[in-house]
Image 1 (cartoon, rainbow, N blue to C red):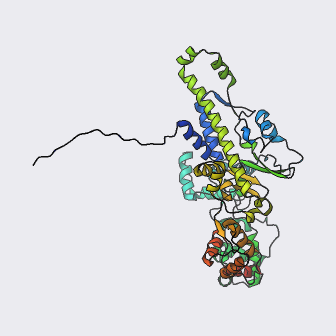
Image 2 (image 1 turned 90 degrees about the horizontal axis):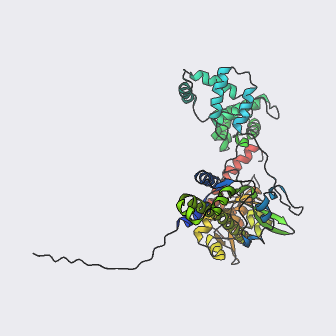
Image 3 (image 1 turned 90 degrees about the vertical axis):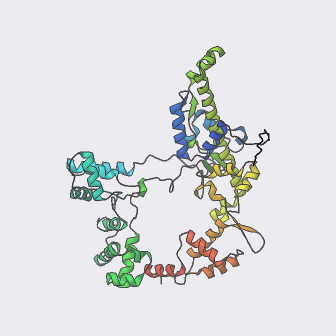
Length: 474
């Protein structure tokens, strides 16, 4: 058997999109959150000696935004507009004052405490183990082993317990607890409650916190009666006392992204119109070092060709600044387009949101949807109704009886309002909520009502009724 083998050469044409390094960097910067951008900026300053931070911001406003923010150019040229505001600016937001961290606050108290030198050393390490909510992260045994290694001497668990006891006496009450139950018990025992509770009520509250917080969360009155052997009246007072406690005593000293975000864009009311501007506080104060730029200008071409690294660094610096300018320009442009669609939000808040998709904004601006997505994820806007992530303004459409459309977000907001204003003695079932929404022209299935309610963290009617009874609202 013979096999014929033939070799040949064939050619075919195909197209492949290859992104340039500059485009990749631009998209990367656009996608960055504020914190990530700071990291990118720090890395660039470390890698390129031609760049430096400077009080006067060198990023000029794009010409196309002059009509959006007349004051933006002044901010960029002299850096002074961040501390000035117009009398017509109804929503001027001054810079935040410096606030000591939780660790700094605790260390200050340690400095004035009666702890001895050894206890101070241990407490200092314990303070470093406290998380943003005010809880101790590691167990006493883990800390004992860790400190024994760090201090190069045996640290017994009891020594850690003693140091922890001192730390837990500091402000705020409940600090350095190892569980929610311990946190609440520390506050009940702190003798710093606003109103001194009845001893019977206090004892009841301590029992609940120590043994069955789950029953309290479920508003299981019968289970609480069995546990405490107290009347409904006493249990209600104990419940009220517990609700006055702070389950996260360290939260006031921390500013995590989930609870606090520095806005990229500000909304202000000026001369009867809503105006969007970039937040001057997030704009990097960046420039090319003047001395280096002058040197490059006086060098002849021959010298520059012999110093390719210097030429490349200058090119890289200019490119990076251009990309930064484009990043902020894109965020502002996308934010403006979003708010043009969501004008009702200014008057009604979230209840006024209209259906909006990435594609709608992309079509308005002639952008790709992925670019709009990068410009809205982890980018925040400060409005009269609070600070919101830009992506929050996108919402799926729901049809109404009259053929119009409403957003899922506004429907959820309406659902929340119905529950918040219900007769607590007769809470609205999901079926009844469905009927009330239909009366307002929003026809959705009961399972959708249930999904929305659960997504907002709102309990079912039966549990809301039990909570009302526990509060004494029956």
